[in-house]
Image 1 (cartoon, rainbow, N blue to C red):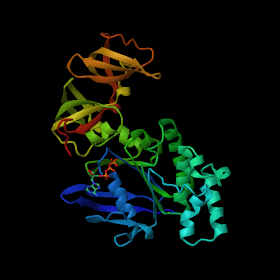
Image 2: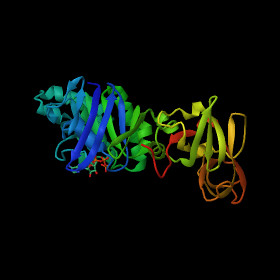
Image 3: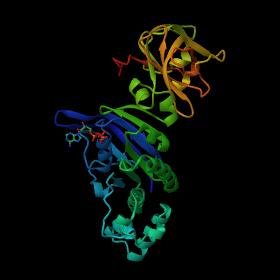
Length: 367
Ligand code: ATP
């Protein structure tokens, strides 16, 4: 019903093109893993290696400690659920869900009982004898999930399963998917390019870019302590302030930034890829600029002029032009009570701990 997955140095080439480049990842049994990245970064290729629809050019895949090298898709302890979940239109929901069990020669009574149990879990028991065309998109998606789980895979592979749903339904189905995954305990590997979806459902997110893994961690880790410029920018809005690390002394790092010179405790620079000296970037989320200075552990990056602002309910989202670098645009979230009249001066005040120090500059990411 659940199993760990071990991907070691997996590379996949198509002719001259490298779709996956030396990817390694250990997934625990029962984990909900989300592969997140832009179109073409290799997410589906990695999922296909796990499902056995593609073989790695180099590297190995093991599920439950067993090498999958010679194991065909149908013999693997995996099931793949695709976006166009292809239910059989002429079959009832019960027969759709029981289909895989029929293929495995499970008797009628047993497979009907199992199908009803799963339809119950996805909230569709009362519709067991309906046909797919009588359902909404979200309901069809639930049937597809029940069908995928009926054969009790150790690992369920989901390729953009919510991609066809409208936003509201998508958010609702994310909650349901997460709850069902926790209930059944099966290892889920889920592909999406939607960072909000990834944050809503994942135990751990794997951020991918150009065939490589950029970062792996809990949603909180990747949002608050991303390891690369790409991971920082893919996981929500962020301001990049190019800087140069001058040196480290007595637990403090001396930094020249486009907004002036600052000293930061070395603890803020907890990224192994940062050099002792050289190009770096200060990454700051918009919500960490508050426009007012409130205390000792806060620091200022100088003052800035409000260019414009829009009301977002919980906050204003404002664009600011720093006095030290008037061509730079800083995006900041300001309190509902803030005066966001263009031309108003504010302090670029931030909590020290919210600064993310990253290697390289946005134009020339160090990877
Ligand atoms: P999307 O979100 O658009 O589905 P993805 O991250 O899943 O993207 P993949 O489908 O894994 O990306 O594709 C990665 C790269 O490999 C793409 O550039 C794609 O064109 C290429 N690719 C995938 N399959 C093949 C193939 N069979 N032959 C040649 N190139 C391929």
